[in-house]
Image (cartoon, rainbow, N blue to C red; front, side):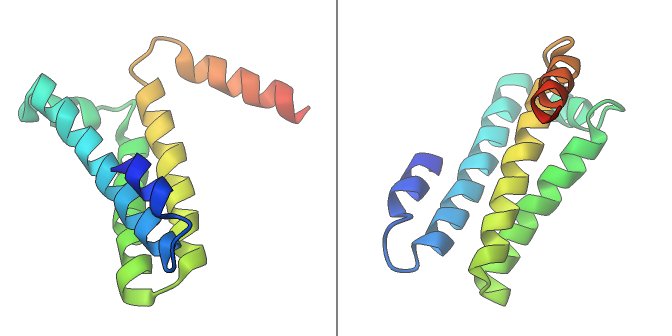
Length: 113
C-alpha cells in the first residue's frame, strides 16, 4: 500500500492519495505484527513504558493524516503528518532492537554537530 501510494504521488491529487495509501500501509504493517504476536501481546508491547510515547505519536499521526486529507483538505499538513508517521514508526521499530535508539541518537547527534 505504501509503495502504491508512492506511485500515485505524481497523479492529480496525488499527494492526498499518497498520504492515504501510506497511512493504510502503516496500518497494515501494524496489523501484520498483531497477527504474528497476537493482539493482546501486541497491545501490551505497544503500550509498554519504553514505547508508549512513540505509539501515541504514531496513532495521532495516522489519524491526523486522514483528517488533513479528507476533512481539512490541506496537502502540506497531510505531507507533514506522513513525515511524522515515518519518524514515529521508525522510532517505534527501533525500540524492539536492543540499544538501537541509543545508536540512532548518537548517529543523529554526530550528523548535527
